[in-house]
Image (cartoon, rainbow, N blue to C red; front, side, top):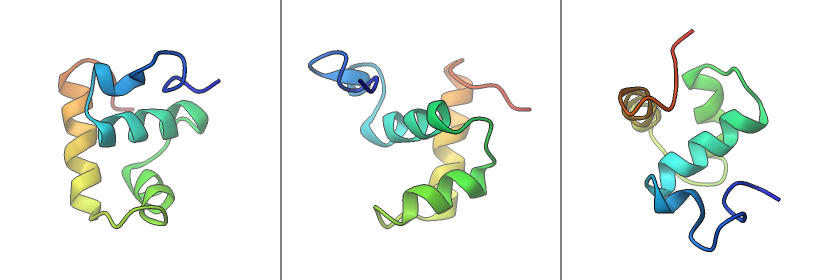
Length: 68
């Protein structure tokens, strides 16, 4: 069961939908660079690389990620 399925509203209850997708990607294949996350997610949704950078910075500011 993915983190999103473990609760009716899943991760989106605590973070935005794109933030939830990024976190799920990192939980599945961690650690990862911003480019690796972007390459994995852009195939499913049209995303700019800078969008992923912004999401990663927001998640770090929220204390949900650390930079390594």
